[in-house]
Image (tube, rainbow, N blue to C red; front, side):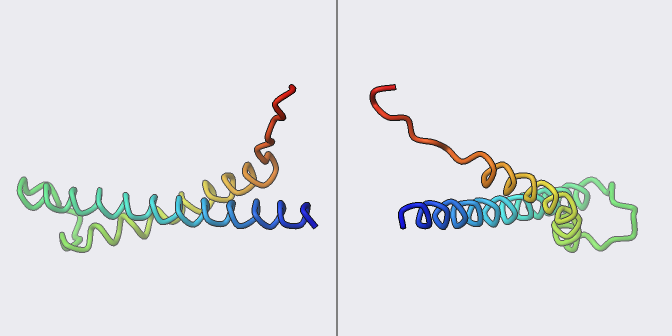
Length: 90
């Protein structure tokens, strides 16, 4: 019974870490897009045809394409290499 609980705990930990890192990547890309939008409005650098306030959403949308493979790798690493507790005698 303890083995099942250990595997379920590891699976939920992997799921939590994957979702948290996915949201962190997309949120950070949104913030960078908003900073770019703000700076391009101030310095008139933005000549790509995009309306400034949408830049955060555009950055976040395109960051998903990088976040998916990164999170697949992260999930694989967590599930294939679980942390093992060492006993006090070893």
